[in-house]
Image (cartoon, rainbow, N blue to C red; front, side, top):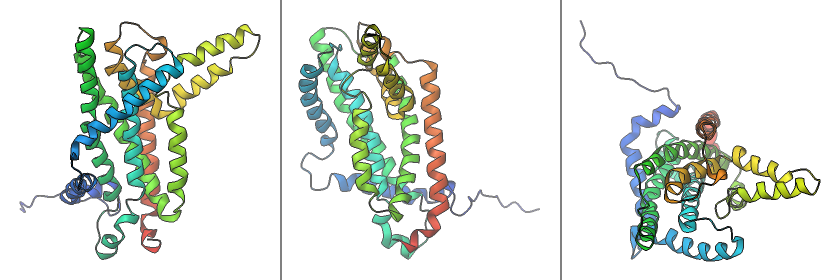
Length: 297
């Protein structure tokens, strides 16, 4: 009898095939991270300093602009901004992953899924670096307020990050294959991301729409503001991840309970559903079109 051990071999062109090149995947992830900070004096510290500086500026501006009185607003703001930056950077980098590796694709065969996957994973690693800024802000507030801003509940953010990672992976695959055939997609996507940041309640709260809806009803009109709030809450996957992230990190650190900040099982189901759906869409179109890449790159 043969004692040879059978090994699993993924179908050529499938998503699982990239795991046969896991060593190359690790090298590509390391390369992308190193290239970002090459010739930088502060290096990886920029992953912490950049969100800190942006948070300080936006906290000052939007605290005066909206005057909503959100408790621990810098933490609230940084939670939203950090999650947005992860989705933004991972998808934007993945967009050009195929076109930037033209020479390698023409020389040898490797799983094409690997290139956007490497960039998304590199952004995933950088995301954890950037959490250092959030940690510093929470320590600062713990000191000046004399109360601990941390709890074991904070560890729940891992679930949210996993959802966002799967969602970003699917979005990255979709954008990477679109960019091969339509090079203008990067300009369209930049404009879309600018719009997306304003539709994701990063520096304001959804509660303001419900208050506006009450005013509209009192005036005898229809609560259009409430309809808009529902679209943001249930139709915007990025906001769903931001809301969950705040639920585990920001909300345990506040003394006031905000109805618009409460997370329900529906939010978790929607977060997982959007992640799985986007992953399925991205991998489907990427797999379907990858054989044509060589004709356009």
